[in-house]
Image (cartoon, rainbow, N blue to C red; front, side):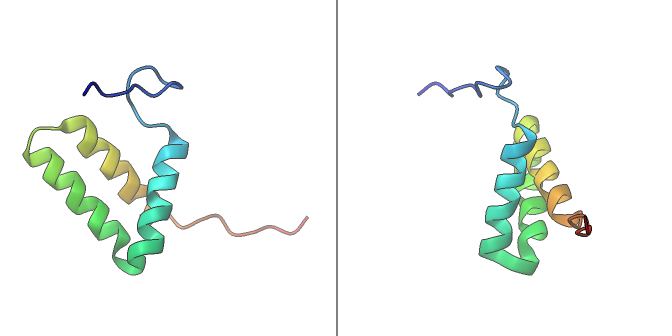
Length: 74
């Protein structure tokens, strides 16, 4: 089955919104271990030679590791 390309990028690369959504799913499912799991997926894909997926998972881990901005008062 052919991979469907992302309509926003046309290159198959994940958008920032998709990375953020993946990070959110991992946070909800795995809580404190979410970034560790994303880094594991990145390493696994790197080992098998799938560099684009490894990079995507590394971006997910980075998103999880980066704390959300503090809320501001209007």
